[in-house]
Amino acid sequence: MSKTRILVVDDEHLCSSMLALKLGRVGYVVETAASGKETIQKFYDFKPDLVILDLHLPDVNGLDLLAKMRGSDSTLPIIVITANILADSAVNAFKLGAVNYFGKPFDLDKIVLSVAKSLSEKHMEDDESISMGLRNITTPDQMIGNSPQMVEISKLVYACASTDAKTVLITGESGTGKGLVAQAIHQYSARAAAPFVEVNCAAIPENLIENELFGHDRGAYTDATKKQRGIFELANGGTVFLDEIGDMPLTMQTKLLNILETKRFRRLGGETDVETDVRIIAATNQDLTQMIADGRFRGDLYYRLNMINICVPALRQRLEDIPAMVQYFIERLNAEYGRSVKQASSEALEKLLAYSWPGNVRELRNAIERAMMLEKSNVLTHFQLCKESPQTLPTPSPEPQSSDHTTLAADLDHCFAGFQLPPEGISFEEVEKQLITLALENAGGNQSKAAKSLKMSRDTLRYRMKKYGISEFMDQGLDCGLADAVQIKPKPDGYSILKWASC
Image 1 (cartoon, rainbow, N blue to C red):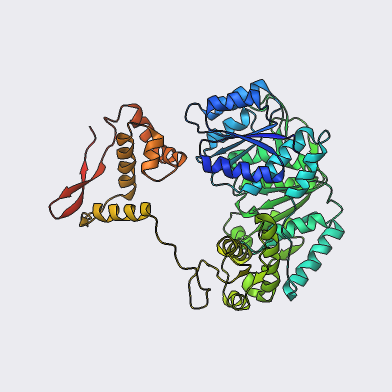
Image 2 (image 1 turned 45 degrees about the vertical axis):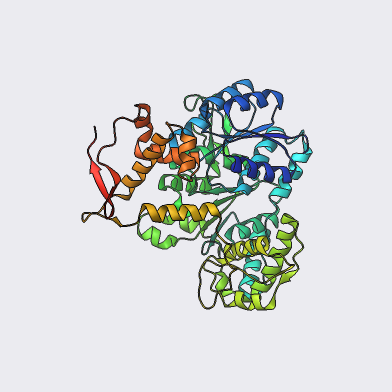
């Protein structure tokens, strides 16, 4: 894998650094670029095998850059990332040849998995190291616990894996580990050597999900210059994990039911059916029976998926598993962070067992990870949890505020001293709109400087500019266009909100 080169293009240094660090740990050679000019130079000098591209760059439209790179190398996989998830930009990115599309903030592990999948699709046969990297990336956390509930789940997992059950429905609260159950079913089955492809039904725009699942033929829409296989075709022989199945549009539910019945589907723009042999595992934290009663989920699809149901219990229902889970996560995180933490103290474990864990296993893992980052010794004694109550754990003493934060707080206190709301109230969105406009004026229209003065990223600023229509306004020279805007004006006894009409 040391010869596999990835170019990360993002003008946000923190984002590109995190991606470069994560990909470097996996074994890729990574270069970063922060502008269109730098990207083109490194594209020809570095010759990347894959590009991760932010659509918003300071000197060029990301879609234009995508088209240029794909025009030079039609086989180059390009993964798009952006803080502003818009259906039209996603469609255009896919039309220009992007292989995947992620909104910020994104899950680093999912980006790395997408990288491995894209590269393996391109040259799996020629690069054995990529397949090794894919196996390492997809190694998940394990199901841990000897409680009666987990023993029953293990039996069901074995039954599903050994009998090759074609449909399984996993239910349970968010954060309980439904994805781990799905992966365990796949790994212990005869399909383990075939792909395991996860689809988050809530994360894909409705107008893109059909293309994602079924793919398209050449000429299916404008700029569809080549055939693209969908998930059901790529996962042939393996498992498709449909997470958040309750968020799948009704039209797609109908097509999914047809696949379950016929084991066939048709690509967008296709004229012939494609056969597929996949196991479908669906998961949800919603009440599907209630959704059926409300007309938001198909009853026939529910009964087809619910051939075998695995209900994953909440962590508060199996507290006896916590000590083993804590030790397991400590060992996993030791390897990831290069630490040598031995265990959690007995006092800490007692308090962990007294907590209700509303975020379930995900919250437990995050609490341990946070504690390991803050704890200096090799025994964990302090955890910070989301809910503070007499039963929660002691939290570390707060660090002294930096001079910047102290100054900012003092400035805000001074600015809003004596602030008065008008009797009729004000629109918070209008206040935010005016603050953004003021920052842009002070920065002379420079979005980077304006974003810095507002303590936000430039992508966030652009998103809010588009939300409030400020981008058009800025193009007109900051002299017109803010109808019914608001302004904070000083007065002898404090500050109050005034309004003025558009020019």
